[in-house]
Length: 312
Image 1 (cartoon, one colour):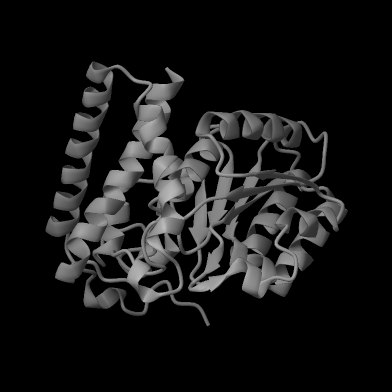
Image 2 (cartoon, rainbow, N blue to C red):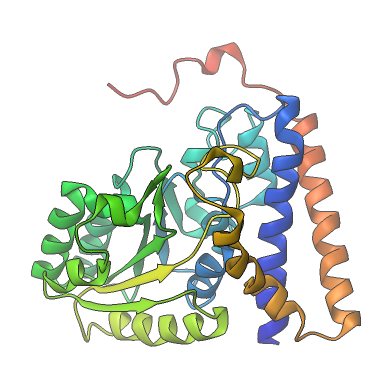
């Protein structure tokens, strides 16, 4: 059942990140964290429409994307703990998650840098004539980088099978979009390159999935060039760290309240009967407890690993 599957994914991501936030002050997590709480529906709605053969590239706020695409939870938490069993052997941390077996090709702490990676991967897919789709996730701050425009221009020239997804949460760290961009219509930036662009304001997860299915099938069949989605959202926690930051002065709790009320996890959860909802929640809680135990019990990397996987 679609609602059950979507609720499981939404609830799972939310509770994993809440647990990350809970343990973070103990210093067992060895990297900065950028939580996706409040933004989960975008990753869930889009990734549920993808196949196992499709791949995604993300930004440093990529926990939701990693999990929605099927990344290994145990190895994700181990990576946050800096353990050898992590997705990058404990060397990369929260901002550089990857799981190629699940189609998660990597995230980066440097704004906009995975956008050209996604375009290059999509060019390879096209050259090999593979029926696969590449999705590039990034925030509203990334559209201010030159490589954003270079990548969109190249993608359109080569007509590569890439879906660009801008998760517009209206802030780049503490700076409002309207104070940074002369025009806040990000879709116009994509349209200027001749790319089909769609804006979804605080999208319903089921509707976003339906739009994504349509776009992905067009891309898979080679019927169009790249497609661009702008999805507005709102992060509930601080830019980096486990807490809220409404006392910091750059935004207010009143501004956030409408986003709390339209929370897609709650919306979908209310459509479920009590029994299946409890079953899903119990199963997810057990999985989360297991993943954190795995991370806690895993060893740190051996000293011999210090100079492996290094490139100059």
